[in-house]
Image 1 (cartoon, helix red, strand yellow):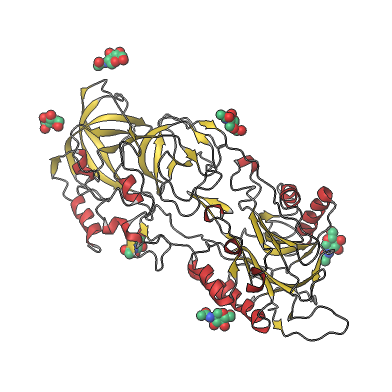
Image 2 (cartoon, protein in one colour):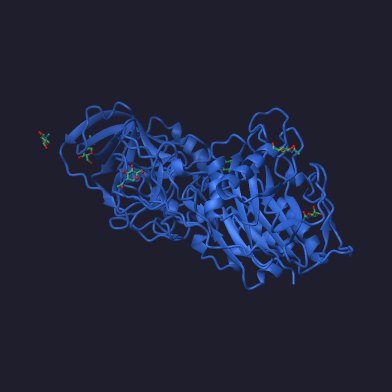
Amino acid sequence: MKPTMRALVWALASLQSLAVALTIAEINGNRFISPYAGQTVTNVTGLLIAKGPSGIWIRSTTPDRDPATSEAIYVYSSSVGAKLSVGDIISMDGKVSEYRSSESYIYLTEITSPKNVQVLSSNNTVKPLIIGKDTFSPPTVQYSSLDRGDIYSVPNAVANISEVNPVLQPSKYGLDFWESLSGELVTVRKPKVIKTPNKYGDTWVYGDWVVSGKNSHGGLTMTNKEAIIIGSPLDGTKNPTTSKMGDQLEDIIGVVQQAYGFYSILPLTAVKVKVNASVAASPTSLRSRGQCNAITVGSYNVQNLAPTSAHLPKVAAHLVNYLHTPDLIFIQEVQDDSGPTDDGVVSANATLTALTNAIYELSKVKYSFASVDPAPGNLDGGQPGGNIRQAYLYRPDVISLYKPNQGGANDATQVVPATKSKGSTVTGPSLSFNPGRIEPASDAWKGSRKPLAAAWTAKKAKKPFYTVNVHWSSKGGGTSLHGDIRPPINGALNVRITQANVTGTFISKILALDPSANVIAAGDFNEFAFVQPMKRFSSVSKMVDLDEVAGIPANERYTYAYDMNAQALDHMYVSPAIAKTRSVKFEHVHVNAWAAYDDVVSDHDPSVALLNLCGN
Ligand SMILES: *[C@@H]1O[C@H](CO)[C@@H](O)[C@H](O)[C@H]1NC(C)=O
Ligand SMILES: *[C@@H]1O[C@H](CO)[C@@H](O)[C@H](O)[C@H]1NC(C)=O
Ligand SMILES: *[C@@H]1O[C@H](CO)[C@@H](O)[C@H](O)[C@H]1NC(C)=O
Ligand SMILES: *[C@@H]1O[C@H](CO)[C@@H](O)[C@H](O)[C@H]1NC(C)=O
Ligand SMILES: *[C@@H]1O[C@H](CO)[C@@H](O)[C@H](O)[C@H]1NC(C)=O
Ligand SMILES: *[C@@H]1O[C@H](CO)[C@@H](O)[C@H](O)[C@H]1NC(C)=O
C-alpha cells in the first residue's frame, strides 16, 4: 500500500458530508487505522463501560464475531460524561479520529465531537473481559508482523504500522493483541510489577498469563512481549510510586488505551500492592584470595558520581557490603571535581578521593585509583559540565599497574611488544600509556567516552593482564518497542558498532602479540549481548561473554530495568585464556534493578567476577 494509506486517511477526512450508521466493530475495523478515519458517523450505540477525566468508553451492543475488531471505543470529550453513568446504553453521532501526540507513536482510534447523545437505558450490567480467559492470552513471540522475526533486526525503521496498516492477528502478535482490545474494559488477574514505576506511578505489569523471560525476582528479562503498563487511574487517584519489581498487586480493572507511545491499561482506581516483594539483595559469594589465582573484579556504573553526590556514601557501601571490596573495580560515570558545574574543571581527583575515602571509612580497605581526565569542553557526552569518565579503583596490596605511564586526554595508548627487563619476573606486552585512552581522536568517540585501557600485574603472576573499561554511546534517540516504527530504532546503533570495532581492534593487538594474554573488557556497553555491536566486538576481539562462560541463566542476565524489560547493558568480556581456566565465576548483584525509588543508588546494578589472572 506504500504511501497510499496515509493519503487515504486524509482523503477520507475531507468527505465530511458522508455520515453513516456503523457498529463500533465496523468503526475500529480489523486493522490499526479505522477505515472510517475522518468520517462523521451517526447513531453509534454502546454501553458506557468507563468514565475518565477527558472522555468515556463505550462497548458495542451489537458485537461481531471477529476477535480482530475491538468492540469498544474511546469517546474523547471532557463534557460528554457529565450527565451519563456507567451502565447507560447510549447512542451518539460523532467523528472518527486517529490521534497521536508524537509521530513515532501508534494512533489511538477514537470518536470526537460527540453530538445527539441519547440514553437508551440505564443500570445495565458492566462486566470487564478477563485477559487470557475472555480474550486470547497476550502473544509471547513477536510484537508485530512488521518486525521480520526479530525486534532488533537491522536495518530497522523499514516500515510504519500506520502506513502498512496490517490486518490484526491478535493471537499471534503482541501489538495486534492490545490493538484488538482498544477501548475495552478488562481485568488483569494477579498482576505482578516488573519495574519501579515512573514518577507518575505508571507501572509495568503482567497478569496470570504465560510470560517469557521470568527471572527469579519476578521481573521479565529480555525480550518479553506480554507486559502492559498501568497508566493514570480514571478516578483521579494516583498509583503508588513506591512499588517495585516482584510486588504482587490486587487485581486491576481498567480500559485498554494507546497512551504516550505504549498500549496501556488505565485503571478505574489506583493500583494497590497486595504483597511486597523482598528487596533483600544477596551480597556476592565471591572472595578474593589476594593473589593472582583468585582475583575479584567488579564493575559498576555509578550514575554521575560527583564529590558531593548524596549517593556517594551509598555507592561506597555497595562496594563494601555487596561486592566485598573487589581487588579491581571498573567504574563508569565518574564526574569531575566540580560535578555538573560547567566551569572547565576536568580533574576527578576529588571525586575518586571522596569515593575511596568513603570505602576506607567503612572497611579499612585502601584503594588507589587510575583514570585519564578528558579534554575540557564537554567532549565526552553525558550531563553537561560533568565530564564523565571511566576509572579503576584497585587494591595496591594485590595488584599494581604494569610499567605505569599516565596518559593524557589526547594520548592514544599503543600495545608495545614485550621486552625482557632485568630483575622482573613479569613479562608481556605493555601499553605506551598506562593508564591510557584508546584512539581518543577517532570519530567513533565524538561526544562519547573514550575507552580506558590499563596493564596490570597481580600478586604472584608471571604475566601482566590487561583491562579495557568502556562506556559506549547510549540508546538515546531510539523508539519505543510499542511504537509505530518497525522494527523499532535502536538509538545510536551504528555509533556503537564503530565503537565495538575500535575497542575490539585494540584488544586484538594485545592478543596478536600474546594469544594467551589475560584481557578483561568491562563496563556499560549500552547494548545487549545478542545485538550487532556486541557481536562485532566479540568477532573482532575474540573476547567472550562472561555470562556465557560462567553459565549465568539467560533470565538472570540483567543489570538494568527499562520499560518492560530487565536487561543487560553492562557486561564483562574475557579473553580465551581467562575463559578456559576452571575457576571462572561471575555474579550480577541486584542492588538497584529491583529496588523501590528511595532505595535506588544508581540506575545500573554492579557485577563481580572471580578470575585466575596468573598467566601460567
Ligand atoms: C440507532 O441504533 C439502534 C441500535 O442499533 C437502533 O435500534 C435504532 O433504530 C437506530 N436509530 C436510528 C435513528 O437509526
Ligand atoms: C438504577 O439503580 C439505582 C440503584 O442501584 C436506582 O437508584 C436508580 O433508580 C436506577 N435507575 C434506573 C434508571 O433504573
Ligand atoms: C515512518 O514514519 C516516520 C515519521 O514518524 C517517517 O519519518 C518515516 O519516513 C516513515 N517510514 C517509512 C518506512 O515509511
Ligand atoms: C508495601 O510497601 C510499601 C512501601 O514500603 C508500604 O507502604 C505498604 O504498606 C506495603 N504494603 C503491604 C501490603 O505490605
Ligand atoms: C588529589 O586529592 C588529594 C586529596 O584532596 C590531594 O592530596 C592530592 O594532592 C590530589 N592530587 C592531585 C594530582 O591533584
Ligand atoms: C576498525 O577499527 C580499526 C581501528 O580504528 C580501523 O583501522 C578499521 O578500519 C576499522 N574497520 C572498520 C570496518 O570500520
